[in-house]
Length: 507
Image (cartoon, rainbow, N blue to C red):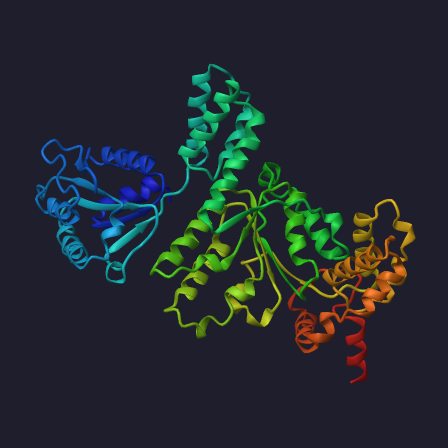
């Protein structure tokens, strides 16, 4: 539901106390003023701590540096006169016992009046005693229509004309920024060369990266890895290649829904994170990395607020890839957590969004311990597919060696016996193969020569792979996948590694 529609509905329904968290104060107040005009031209009063009430000549400056007096002013209003009272930054006073008590008393009074209190703040901070009294309203970032209107105004001011394709690119690139940031970065572009054009996209993207960094929830992750950088995983690659055009308008006209996402489950170091980066690069979409731990905060309601902010930002930047690394560590043991249910509420908000999202946000979640994940996350509808990424077989190990050697020694690939290296490294993961090559380079460098196949074999002989040090855990994970609970990412490799298969046959 659009903000104005929802806000007007809450006003008509006489919700007494509303809370809107946003940094776009001017845009929010403009939207509230438009809603007030739509509802029989309601009066709008604005209070802040420094200047008191503004916009009312009879109460100018009232409540200055006195938040309790600001609330008493509401009681003095004509009970039958419709009004919206905006209290800027009022969350700072909610912990005061007098303010909290006064707000609860006002909530009962305003239920019988056509008047509403609106608290505006940059962050959501609601004390427990007010959680049932205050209604939180989401104020989304500017949509494409608002951005297009703003761009049209700026372009008209320069006296230039911009073709539709360039304008569409600018609008799409500006998604996820506040109107104030859009004005600032485009004003900088105009000041630089006197006009707006397609070359300003990099400037906008840099502003977007700065915005995302400031949220401290999402990271704008550079994705330079390619699908060809992944050795093996042919089933997964084919699945991704088939969906490469699924975000296009042509796909919408065909009737295809937006792809929802992937859950990649498997052994550590087998290329799950690399796959997330390669997807973003191959599909030419921005890659946002979510550290789930950043969602959790100490204040009541703040974790849920950060979760909503993360969702809002990801949807505003869509189409995009949302990468959630090691999701099993964030949501394991939900029932046993002593955090007053915060983790459960965050998890509930997250999986509901996964199931119901309509925006083209492709979620790539990775997990090492499938047993730690709640069953609700694994059911159909959350992700398009669950892939199991197991240990590479000999053919895949050869491909992985070739990928890394081609990067390290692109002009001397034939000097290395990748077939032999693959044969001599059973149960090695992709990460362990890469580290073996690094160790071989140290050997060669220390002797003032290039590293050789024998150096790689020597390094491999000194490496104990995770498949041996954590054998029980990996066998359990492989057995889970072998039961048909996930789709194998590799086409030609069996789910179990050769050594473990032999052990199972012997037993």
